[in-house]
Image (tube, rainbow, N blue to C red; front, side):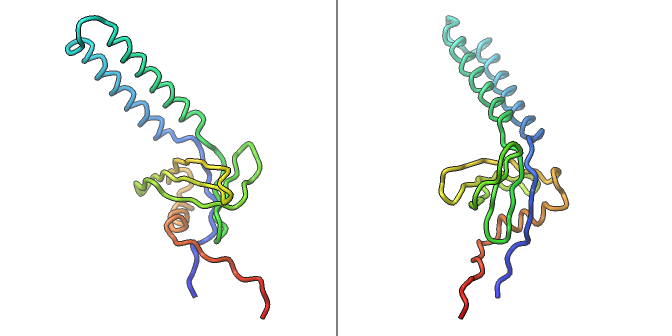
Length: 152
């Protein structure tokens, strides 16, 4: 008999760590743009203005991405994943897959079984350290089959 990963409910909040990373990337991009404008840009400011506008658009989209990142609770019941936003009702069953694993942080994609909902989560150990090991076990474990309800 195979054993399933333990039941776990993990809180999802906006990540200050992700905000710092996005800010660092935006600052690095601005630094490169500034240096290019001073020393490497072709004559005329049109090219620099276009590049600065593109940088501003990307920085704005990154800030919007972080600000609108989902918050709520990700639940593993032993057989299915479900997602409950902090401002709504629980979804139906779905699946969760790790796309990036840095041991103390995970980037996870959750998708409802009917494929109508998709959410991306940046999960961090510091949000719920006690449940972190169970969450990782559940995400890495192969899906278990629900118990059969038929009688012989």
